[in-house]
Length: 328
Image 1 (cartoon, one colour):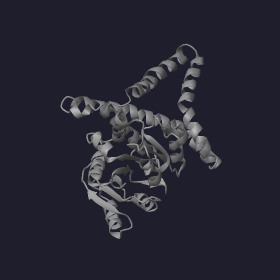
Image 2 (cartoon, one colour):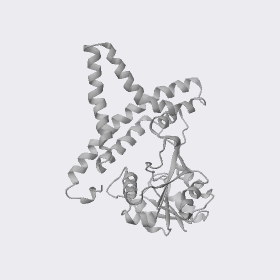
Image 3 (cartoon, helix red, strand yellow):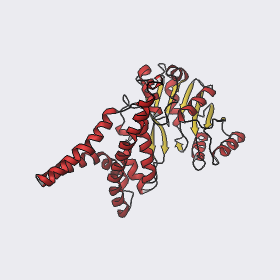
Image 4 (cartoon, helix red, strand yellow):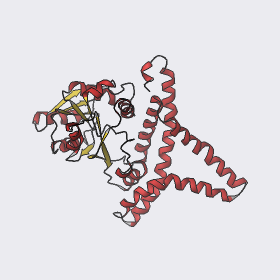
């Protein structure tokens, strides 16, 4: 069984060494690595090319200027020769046993078509800790039969990739969710590899986090994903919260209990995830992390509420002329 690791990169000069170094430390080395550069304007391409020339990794570097993530991944997979494709991203650090755990099920008597790995936060600052607790599920929370893997950590057969038509190149964000949903339609259930761990740093400030979640939600709108989730968010912020606030002022202050109950429900899981982190922080940073959680939660919700209709409008304008958008 030949295994190809693929990734697509853009302007990752400051972080690409983490991926390359961790690939070199794999207990099960990849048979080949194909990385597509989407037209980096920093040192990314020169680092990749020098690494390929060194020969410490079986690395091929391709350039596809202007390619989005989907296009980059499809180009990398098409150029690879492995029977099994393991996908990851720039800016991450792979655990040493990542690839071994991820591809082991393909050597079993009943091999799957898709194996889900996991990704976990590697937070360095108080903000990153608070963000990880607010938006990222822990390993215990993952339900393998329903889990949709990120393309930071997933493996699939070439046949599976061909069956679903590859990654959707019309979509710039949330492309791996659409890819997963197509795979699940044909090859459910996926096999789950909880020890195939990729570590990544969460966004380091509120502005970059807002942009990230705006773009994610815009991708949801383009792909027509999670209608009920987005509707529930609009109802919460634009209907329920104003109504409860009005009742507090006009009827009784006891209605604040409703707002408090809603906030507690909204923040329970982030604070539960945060607790293990707090013991390693000084008291001042513990308080700061606690305060960051609701700020991050509301900021992410606002970003999603702004991004989703932008993507939905984009979809509606193109739906008639582009039948590929009807992917469900």
